[in-house]
Image (cartoon, rainbow, N blue to C red; front, side, top):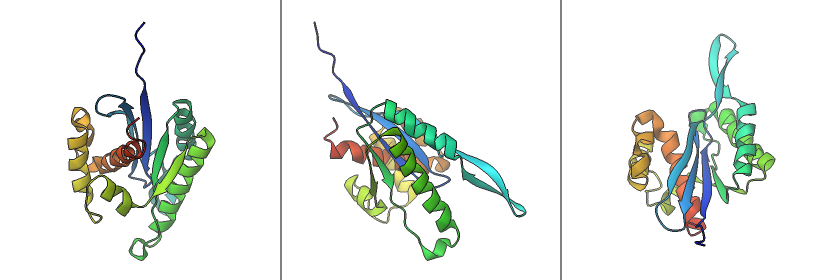
Length: 174
């Protein structure tokens, strides 16, 4: 009987409200493929007179539990830190990062926080590369899944895919 080759799964999260979560499947032989690419789960909430996009914490938690059931080897969450030019949006970034961390803990998924400069260097991008460069590189590394990154608004998915690729590199792709 022929032994079936297994593949490993890795994930990554761009924690912004316009970010995304991506899971890739990396077979022992062959190129990785994207199994799941979803925009950050959000909803709209009226704050004062303005409708704002906020995280859907229940949906984020559900993703963590489901990813735990999928036995991902590692998830990378982009380690965003406060930046004075973002003002009050820093709170949103922090909330997103924390929500995704809690989701991975709920699902029992091993995760690590990685600074943008680090993962970009590991995948061959300059540390100050813009989101367009990330989108183009994701299309190159995942040619069969390039349609996922064809629009400029897909930059969150592209960056998450590149971080998942980095997670795979850390584990030798298996």
